Each structure stands twice: as C-alpha cells, then as structure tokens.
Image 1 (cartoon, protein in one colour):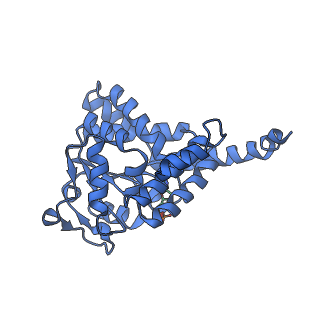
Image 2 (cartoon, rainbow, N blue to C red):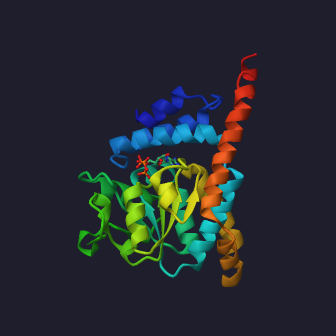
Amino acid sequence: MALNENQNNIVPKTHPRYQSLKFRHKIIDGMKNLVVAEAGLIAHGRGECFDYIIGEKTTKTAKYAIRAAVAALLIAEKPVISVNGNVAALVPNELVTLSKLLNIPLEINLFYYKEGRIRAIKDVLKKAGATDIKGINEEKMIELEGLESNRRKVDFIAKADVVMVPLEDGDRTEALKKLNKKVIAVDLNPLSRTALWADITIVDNIIRVIPKMIEIANQLKKLNDSELNDILNNFDNKLNIQNTLDLIIDHIEKQKVEAFKILK
Ligand code: ATP
C-alpha cells in the first residue's frame, strides 16, 4: 500500500491538525517519488513553524501582497513562475490553473539536483495539465551571473522581466534582483533573505496563496493597465513586511492569553 494511503488511514479527517498533516504527507510522498529533496522536508518544517505564528491563515498584509503580485504578473511582458519540488508536491493542480489563467509558463528550477528529479517534477506538472513547462531542456539552459548554486541554470527566467519565486533561497533572489528583474516571493518567513530582497513578498503558505491568486486573478483580469499600475504603485513592500511582523506580534500576544483557555 502506498505511504499516502497508509498515512491517510492513520490521520482521521476529524483530527484537529488534519490539514497540516495532509500537506506534510504530500511532502513525504513527494520525497519518495523524487519530487522533493530531503532538505525540502526540513524547509517545509521551517515553513510550518512560521505558519503557526501567523495563525495559519492568509493575513490582511498577505492579501495586499497577493493583489500587487497578480497586478505585476498581469502587467509584465515576460513573466514566469519558478517551480521547485515542494511547490510541485503541494499544489500542482492550482499552480497549473494559475499559469493557464495568466498565460505564464512554469519553469522547473532546483537547488538540489538528483538523477530523475526534473523528470519526476515534469510528470507531476503534466499530470496536472501543464502544457508550457520550461527548464527541462538542458540545451536551452544558460547560467545566471553571480550565482554558484544549481539554481544558476535557467531557461525562460533569463529573459523574464517578472519572476515569481515560491519557496526560494535568498541567493537567487539577490542574483535576479541584480539582473533588474522584478521578484515576487512566497515565503512564510518574513525575515528570510528572500523575503527582504523581493519586490513583492507574500508571507503566507503556498497552499493558500495559489488558490487566492486564482481568485484575485479572475477579478483583476477585468482591469486595464493603468488601474493595475495604481495597485502596484500603492503597494509598499517594506511597510507591508513591517506590518506583517506587527500582526505576528499581536497574534502571539493574543495567544499568550487564549492558548491556555483550550486546556480548560
Ligand atoms: P533565505 O536564503 O531566503 O534566507 P532560508 O535559507 O531560510 O532562505 P530555505 O531553506 O532556502 O530558507 O527555504 C525554505 C523557506 O521556505 C523558508 O523560509 C520557509 O519558511 C519557506 N517555506 C517552507 N514551506 C513553505 C510553504 N508551504 N509556503 C510558504 N513558504 C514556505
């Protein structure tokens, strides 16, 4: 029996942490299928920790950032969404829906290379309906300047003006910025280098972000470029991250009192 089935039998739907455990097992299954790197499990755990302290919900500040991100993707001339193993394991169908809705290619870009991983991720995306997948043809790849890691090998990202980088490492965000690209990051850690380097930082869980982006994209597609530019110009990323940190502090302050009530 597949691990997935096993684990789903173990975790009943009534379990108070069912959602969190469900996605944890998607990551574990992804690792067994080569989609997720071993280090991806640790990255997921770090994300879970930050999710806890934002209250496991999409905050007001995350919604502002999502709106600005969708506006930026709609205005962009050559946008692209970078995909790593964790994202492919967690939200493949939603990612493909967003990519089709905005007419944006998905580019597989990995920090940890392993024989067969690109193919495994490509298969997951194809199964979810993706038709435009970049980063799978070694001959088309070029190397980004100023980057030593495997992530330096890119395809469409080299030409892109706006790059969305869910669950990224700070080095590549910095390299992309130095190449004058607009970077949209999705990172639960508001203080990671990625979060601080990006132009638009969505501090939220990717499992909630992509469905929310689909919802907002359906609304913003009706706007013209001038209205989309207004949304972008009214967004201040530094202020939004600072407000996110204030929300976290407020949430923890409330938990200081509320957390003990559930024990009674
Ligand atoms: P940086 O180099 O930007 O400082 P890092 O080294 O702290 O990043 P990595 O281990 O490269 O982080 O990547 C994991 C990041 O992804 C963490 O900041 C973690 O909070 C975030 N993360 C993990 N899972 C999710 C998720 N499901 N949704 C959003 N962010 C996530």
